[in-house]
Amino acid sequence: MTDFSSVKGKVAIVTGASDGLGKAISQCYADNGMKVVISDINTDKGLQVVEGIKLAGGDATFFKADVSNEEEVKNLIDFTIETFGRLDGLVNNAGIAADNRPIHEYSTAEFDRLMSIDLRGVFLGTKYGVEGILKSKSSGGFIVNVASLAGILGNSSMGIYSSAKHGVVGLTKSAALDYAPYNITVNAICPGTFRTSIWGETPEEIVTQYAKIFSPSGRLGDPKEIGHLALFLASDLARYISGSAISIDAGSSAGKITPVQWAHPEILE
Ligand SMILES: NC(=O)c1ccc[n+]([C@@H]2O[C@H](COP(=O)([O-])OP(=O)(O)OC[C@H]3O[C@@H](n4cnc5c(N)ncnc54)[C@H](O)[C@@H]3O)[C@@H](O)[C@H]2O)c1
Image 1 (cartoon, helix red, strand yellow):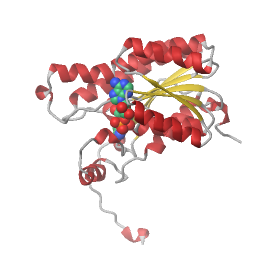
Image 2: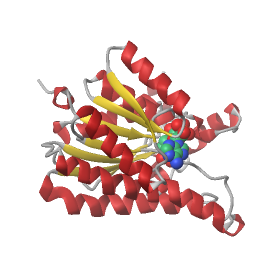
Image 3: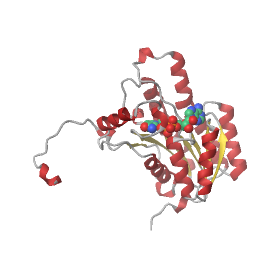
Image 4: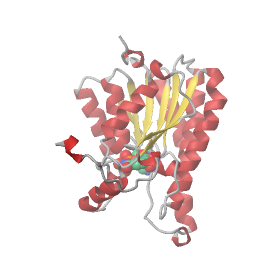
């Protein structure tokens, strides 16, 4: 029987894990027997995630780190190895969005800030995470980078976000080649539209409308669905998958949608 038991006992760090997709990935990892370091800049919410995991019988701890701060990322890796004795995998999930605007309307400071978290953060996590995995002599090391549909396709009014996420995909593919000989897989997850707090103050009806227009399925993704993909990539079932940018978007990145009229709609009745 094929199952996910190979992840049991693996030690993983998830960044941006106090909320949204990172929280869902952490819960899925812990539910399946992994030891998880929940890392985020939001301590209160991070501790709540740890508490929830422990109540459900899982093993997790919190470490505060800003992914754009080199010293803090280094400390995060050291803390993990001191606490759990090893590191098998890292999910570079922390990221921020920007207001939707054409490129000439972004300030250089906005560009630098977004890049420092969404791209530099993934570089730092990969740099120090790989060192930790190598030192741990993990037989199933993995890096999962959370990119975006905007890391595969250009996106009007999301130019700086899309630039950072394309960078994450490039870094992922290159790192996969660097570390394949050392049995560390490196993949990117490219989510379409998921219901998380990244949407900020955007009214619910606009988010729903967005999903109807931009998701072929007509619905937003459930963060748990990202957890399932991240679990697969952490497992030994996925050891031959590396350097991939895997879309999880109900087909949004597959192509253009053109209006269609069925000749036999009665088949649906
Ligand atoms: N939700 C979506 O529809 C969607 C779609 C595509 C890609 N993504 C990507 O998924 C990832 C997670 O997004 P989300 O929707 O869960 O967002 P979210 O806002 O719900 O959660 C992001 C978490 O990251 C933390 N964070 C922010 N800046 C940080 C920093 N500098 N260091 C450490 N932690 C930091 C926040 O405190 C928060 O807990 C991001 O990289 C985002 O770009 C999300």
